[in-house]
Length: 253
Length: 288
Image (cartoon, rainbow over all chains, first blue to last red; front, top):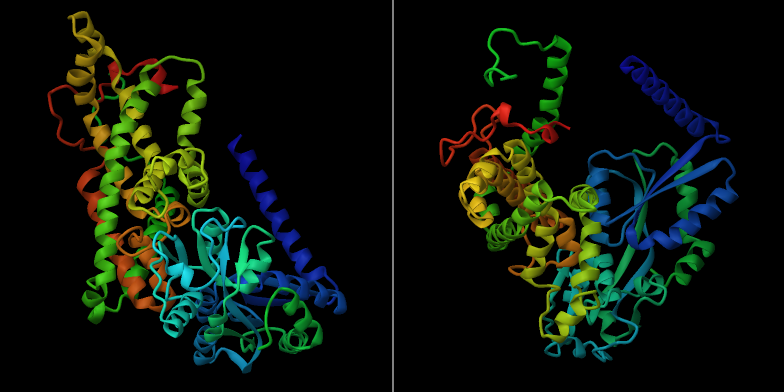
């Protein structure tokens, strides 16, 4: 009984193993481009990856989305990737500083803060100063992460001091707290509001110009497909890439 | 007596390959811990763990874990009693559901709590009207921790109750003790070791709670940012601080587990001479 179970397990493992080999080696020329991209790039980069696969038959683009600092840490620990797209220059600097980048990074997009409120806007937020009204539950990113650093920059510029009820580790957590109605308002990126598809409403504010985040992208030295990585970078920074990014709410670099 | 003596002497029937795999298993747990120790920036360890943010987070963690352990005991003991001693329809189903937080990803627990106690939640809406706000408060942290820790207490205690059997309770009842007295004077003293280990496990689980807290309670220094959340945030900018705090949490966990868990061979001090685990008193259902 046990022996049979063991044999079955072994067979299953073998099958899984060979199946894995099949999909890796059998797809045309079998080139796989691994792209590490900031979580905020999920929608446009998924679109770009699909169109890249279509225009380069036999190529597969594998996307890994996470916080830029997580990705930079993973790359520092030897994670295999061909391209890294960061949500801020600081995390890109970690990668270039460690000598992992191939060539110098190119800026390909920018993102601006905006106020996100629940669709009904229960607290009646219309300006950045409204966020500081007593009794308003505001959620921001912690100063340690890029969106939080941007929020601090805006505070400095406007002189408006916020008393947030929570300082989240990621902008998606801020968005979640606003979308669920727990918070009256949150500071997120323009692209987050666009991607939330009606779950939150954006309240743009003039002072957001004080903290524009630039997104750099680079090919990686440890990558296995450097030529292909270069072509992908051209596509992202080229006309088609810029259109997809603009559709998602990103600004020019 | 089917199991003469708890300890075996002389013959140890462990094949060598089993021992080898056991070594791998132990290394699998110990090696990552050793890796953390190796990565600690020792010259700066003290300043890193005694920073204002770290101490605030540690204090909050200990306070909330103590609070949730108390809540676990308050709610978990009755639940374990009902599951172990009661007979009612849906008992098995109830037990399965009680165990659910053990296997659910904590973030799912957080979402569930959000839709229960959140501003727009099932109960939260009423609470909000009554002027009670749970989201973004320390109460939310305690609730999140209790949600994930309660099954540990219930499972430990229910196991102890079943293993202990009902003989002494039956005797006490025939001597005229009322259910309340039996519970207080016989049942609870008998299962005290099980209750203690369940409470310690709950405390340890509460201390490590992360996902549900992050989703449900938020993260603000001194209010909701417990030690695991602080580690997660520090990791963004200061890996050394994150590693130092990780070691601190490991140390606290080792102390908690070490103080309470003394292994199956040496049961903790008993309040009376009554044995917690007499094989011949073991009821049939305990061995199902």
